Image (cartoon, rainbow, N blue to C red; front, top):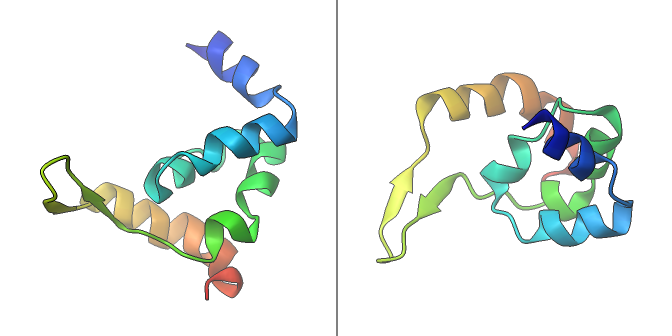
Length: 86
């Protein structure tokens, strides 16, 4: 698995942006802390200006995020991006 993550991280910024734009907010924020270059891309206002902190299922139900994901977001990520949220 590490081999695949290294290949992902080594993609050009433009390709990473295309891929990351297709992910939901929580999937994007789960990538924080993997690599400094990736973190810099994730700090872009494209990902930080609007946050979706729930998951909708294929049958249009809305589900809460797991408490551990919310905790990580609040404790580790929000303090670094709070000034970019609109």
